[in-house]
Length: 128
Length: 154
Image 1 (cartoon, rainbow over the protein chains, first blue to last red):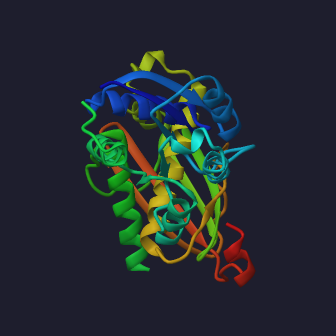
Image 2: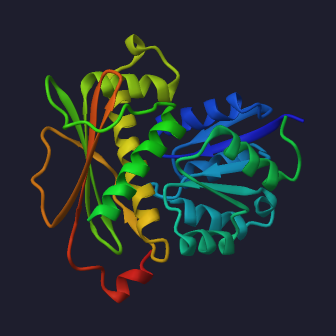
């Protein structure tokens, strides 16, 4: 199965890197949407269905935490799993975001295989 | 502050290896010779402070090429600056997460500076030699931690 993925990060370089890492890890990617903050991500999600959202936390306008909160409150979008990619690996931050509705969390820096493993765990299936 | 120095060095090595596929050749005296890029950010938490990353232009361009999977000659200055800021963000976040995993912290967005800022408070430095130059990081930590109310802002 090939997956439709939305990458949310205010850094174009980081979005490019995540996409490159997904492809390099053997992750089956059919479509890769990108958004630079939570507001843009919600606009994409109102038009396009995705299998998983990969999001940064610290972003302008609507940050990753608010994005998770809004997705969790949306009857249609709440089923889309969200995986957080963040530099903050403190336990309290991870627990807080998982409690808000994030299904996975990966701390930067990460190896390609670590990102793929977290996606496989979140999606509940091998991703290649 | 030997422990913080060790943590900072481990963070530099881990970020370079995992995200940029680069291994350092050991300690460097510092960044010198020719033009350089300086990325700077502040952080609030326990501790609060600032973080500075300096890299020679050659190092900055090769790191950017590795990160984006592009050829050096295809890169523009904006991409190089953005990746160096992202590198600073990741090393700083990694070091803070290792130093204090119980308290949350907030990183400001990194910015490029024309020259390195003056050191303030307790300073920890680390410089590594890469194949085409040096990369150095400095962490300045304020003596006072954030107030109890600030802990709940995040």
